Structure formats: structure tokens, C-alpha cells
Amino acid sequence: MRPPALAVLVCLAVASLAHAGPRACGNDADGRGTVVPCRCGDVLVSSRTLTDDDPVTQGPCDATGLVVQITRDGDAVLDLAGHTLQGTGHGFGLQILRGGSTGLRLKGPGAVRGFGTGVQSGRGGLASATNVLAAENVRDGFEVAGFGYTISGCEAVRNGGTGFVLRGRDYHADGNRALENGRVGVAASGRNASLGADTGNEASGNGRDGVRVRGRNSTVEGLTVIGNARRGLRAHVARGRIARTTASGNRAQGVAADGPGLTVDDAAAGDNGKPGRCGRGRACR
Image 1 (cartoon, rainbow, N blue to C red):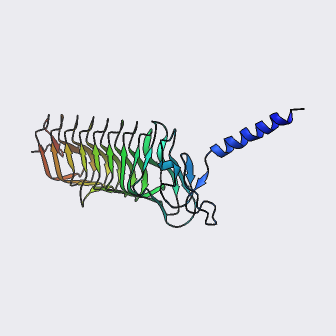
Image 2 (image 1 turned 90 degrees about the horizontal axis):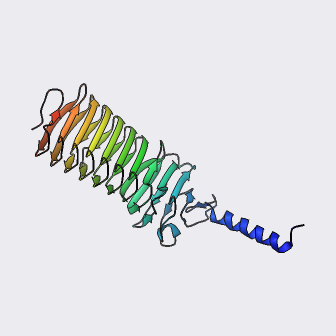
């Protein structure tokens, strides 16, 4: 028979491991109104405005910061409220699996810094991200896929991979900046996407192209691409539109755009390493 003292120690060790694992957190963690602050690696199951009482805001996370898995109906909000989620080069800062029936609304100001990937969301996870900084992550800053989501006023800065990886249909990205990322500033693909229109987006100082766009029926408007190591804008879009683009100081073409039915208006591309093209057989000035 196992000595009683040893049995007690085993039980304590098992309990400690169980306590150390992921747990549900949020403003209503159990469906009965119980508020549970979030720790590194926890699963957010309801809306939450982060405070200094959330341990996830108080020190670096060894792996993923928060997993979002909100299955309840209704609006779901994660407000960073000026806080930073800090990583150690591993996992996701925010991994959004489900964001309620309408998708998570991620609100800043706030930052996700130093993880493997900053913010990652699959189809239906994210409704919007506003005023969020993803910086110095090992791979990409934002990786988002889905339908009808919005990315606005966000920044991706000095990430090792691409600043913004956007996929899907009917999404909108405006007022964002991608600066000094190791690869591409913004890589957007899909259908009926709107990049810009109101404020416009900027991609400068990135290690490859500033912006890459592919798909159909998408628009790029009010874009500024400066000082990227390859092209400023590379677009292959069918029946799309590019307007009010400013490209300068890029090592290759400022604008390289083509695609059946693509319209390019007011593309100012000067002082780039190679002549650009704005549609079939048409040079950019």
C-alpha cells in the first residue's frame, strides 16, 4: 500500500497542475455573473474590459496570452483599455476561435507584443479590431480570415513576418499602418474587400512589398507606400479599383497592378527603383 504521506503529495501535485492549466475567465465566467480576471493562457468565455487585476496584463506570458472562445449569443467585447499583452516569442497574443454570435469586437488602445503571432482569428471569430498595436511578434502581427469584419486604426510594427494578413470576403480595412515588418506590410486576398476609402492605409519600410492584394471586386483607395524593400503596391485584382495611391522610395516598382477589368486612377508613383505599371500596358507616372 502506498504510504499516506506520499498519497497526499501526489494529490497535491495533481491539484496544483489542474490549477495551473487554462481556466474560464471574463465578466461572466460561469453564466451566473461571476467575474474572473484573466491569466496567461486562460480562455475568455464572455466580454471583458482588462484592468490591473488581470494577471495577463502584469507580466510576460510563456506561451499564448488569451484564447477567446465565446459561444453565447449576443455582442462580445474585449477591451484592452490601455493594457499590453506581452509574450516571450511563443504562441498567440490573442487566439480568437469564437466571438459570440456576431464576432468579437476587439477594442484598444492596447498592444499585443512579443508573441509568436500577435492576433489570430479564423472565420467568424472577429467582427472588428480598433486601435490595437501588434508589435515585435516573431511571425505576423494580425492574421484574420472571415466575412464582413473591420480592421481600423490598428498598427503592425516590426513583426518578423507580415504586418497584416487579411483573407475572406466583404471585409474593410482603413486607417491602419504597417511599418518596418520583416516581410510584407499588408497581404490581402479574397473578394469584395475594401482597403481604404475614408482615411486610407500606410505601409512603409517593410522588408518586402508594402502591400499585396489579390482577388476580385476589391478596392484599394488612399494608400501610401514608402521605402519598402521591394514593390510599394503589388495588385492582381479582377474587376477591382485602385485610386489615390502614393508610392515613393520603394526599391522596385512603386505600383505594379494588373487584372481583367481593373481600374487604376490617380496613382502617383515617383522616385522608385523601377518603372511601375497601372494596368495592362499603362505606365505609372
